[in-house]
Image (cartoon, rainbow, N blue to C red):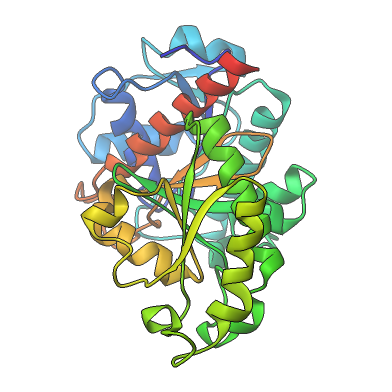
Length: 337
């Protein structure tokens, strides 16, 4: 794999969660997992104690600038200094939320400036961040703002070894989904997915499977008319543009092994329609990727897991997958300009 021109920036996430210990575990597995060099923005004390709690022998190398990370990475986990707090696993606090927010802000700035080739965000607790002034539904919307984009231009994709899914509507009540769907929404997000699969994932002719909203994809209007009014016209418009989009497919048949072989990403109508199959199939390897940004951003597709933080029970698979995917996407962008 062609190495990116710069290391990846990793935000520490909520220091009371499982993020810090999994970052340390990922560094230990860097060679076996073919991870690109990365550095953590802040939290040297947190990382040291989290790794010790997990019995991980991770040497930390404090760096003053992102440029130092590439050469330090083979010897230890590079950490930018001057942001820190006390480590209390499973006990979130405003001090910890402030560290999480400051780390996210600085890591995003490094990615945006090009000092980092991409951004990997460890899990946050949005309710805790709200206490220290974070006014966004999540990190995806925050990053759209940082990149001077409208929120709808940042598209969430969940990716695992055998499946990629995109929810068109995300954090809203299920009852609101039908009124939020539109031909424009489907086309807009599908275009972003299509372009990102080409640019960042190296897929020459992406195939998109568009899911139906209703049982049996409406069954010719018997169970709802959104498929005829909204989804079919959107698919027709996408195909007119040369995008290989099919559907609407019944959700209960779209995620079987045979069906998954026929598309590169499934465009789903709502949050759980996209996340349940991926988490059921490959929870410990799921990655949240933000498409449509000028920067690379990935995150493990799990939360802070305060209940098991510091116990050694958390699986590092999704964190490792997120770092590896960010490096691979950044390398493709670097190779193709």
